[in-house]
Image (cartoon, rainbow, N blue to C red):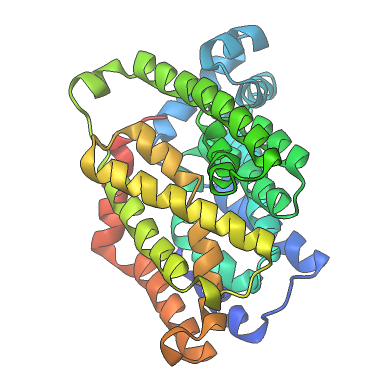
Length: 345
């Protein structure tokens, strides 16, 4: 029940404030998220596993930790947790900082920041940030990168991917964005360069990710292990992306943002088709998480589109009710929780 109150707060304030958040408001929300996510106790699918890691880190050097986890960002934080003996609370707290910075920065750049935060709350905040702490930190970096990409700051975008990669090996999946955009704009010479560069990064990083996952969790693939949540989340993302693709003219975005969302939508469609007709693996689920921001983009802007001749308030109520169901339906919450128990970091 405690998870309902922050959602209610976001709903109430989204009716009063549709403009960008002030620096003070951003700071207050950031502090709340860090405390809410970082100081939780015995919450999360892999709580026992991460608790064990934080205990073992007290007796390991940074090199030993890095050799075990292969990502320097997470290894460094785990090393700091070990030498300070702050345990899993310290680990969760530090990792939540990266996610919270990313989600607040990302949502404040959208048309209606509080509505965007509300759309992010049921899944990204309650589920992902409290369940998969390494990937949530990576996702925080990715969220910053998406805004930088939208601003044509491609160097900043790739730097954000490198930062995300330091927390989770699946993060470079976002090279699919410039790759797909380059395919769409293949007639331009500059796009050809991006295409070649994107293909190299895609095969290298994603090949490395799948290889490491296969090596670490070989029995998942041998037994054709399926992450059921991949089909659910990719299916919902697919339907929402269709709204954008069909009604793209009603989304009054800048050309760069519209190109970004078009690219994200095509990736979501491809992931859904792959998930539908192939083995729905943990790797598919992991990569799909990085494209969840598309739903925040679209859902938070739907009230401004007046699709089906619905007014701003009517669409806003629909978006709120959709997210309300995600937060409050007991069977759905339990089902998602049970699914998370199947996913191993």
